[in-house]
Image 1 (cartoon, chains in turn red, blue):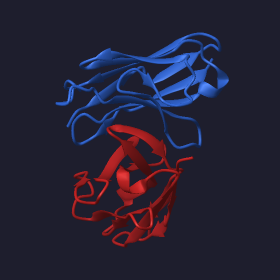
Image 2 (cartoon, helix red, strand yellow):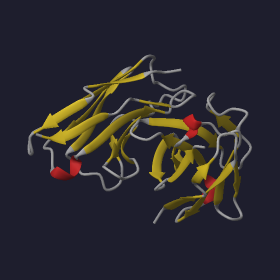
Image 3 (tube, chains in turn purple, yellow):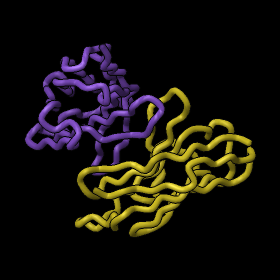
Image 4 (cartoon, chains in turn blue, yellow):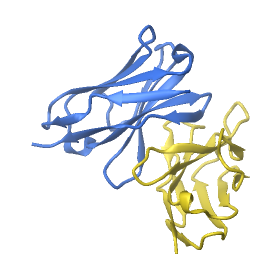
Amino acid sequence: QVQLVESGGGVVQPGGSLRLSCAASGFTFSGYGIHWVRQAPGTGLEWVAFIRYDGSYKHYADSVKGRFTISRDNSKNTLYLQMNSLRAEDTAIYYCVKDHGGNWDYWGQGTLVTVSS
Amino acid sequence: DIVMTQTPLSSPVTLGQPASISCRSSQSLVHSDGNTYLSWLQQRPGQPPRLLIYKISNRFSGVPDRFSGSGAGTDFTLKISRVEAEDVGVYYCMQASQFPWTFGQGTKVEIK
């Protein structure tokens, strides 16, 4: 079955960096675009970034543009999110989400990022 | 950006009774390919979101048929025909028709 497993979250100081990973299984990873979506504590969902199936095309939310970088390694079935210059408002659970032609059909369990001094 | 507005934000429901959630977009969600990428997500307490309905009215794999979606253009509705205890949670509409992709604020469904 399809599985997306995020890792790499933790506590980091403002201005610090963190790299999240999302390990995929149960489907042909190289055939699908993948999103990062985040959810601040007790709030709603915010789309963060998207990468096309082959890595040739990337999109970012304005709130993270220039600070976050999405990438993927199709040989390892893994998605990444490099987060630099972290701010308190980046505190959230980060989910990776598989995109099936505009239908976001599978979500990971999420990994918690806390930005605090 | 397309703004997605859900009503109500909270919906206390009696078990076995119907529930309905409305979602309105600030622009038409008809994509240039002719599809309307409006989805509904369910987030149970302590769980990640999961896909319930895609392209307005298509139930995702494993979703009970008491869930149904309808609408067109800018107005959409999610209906639960008979609410069960496991339906408690927050429901989000989202659009993937136009970048940047956006979500509604969420509607909390709880049992009276």
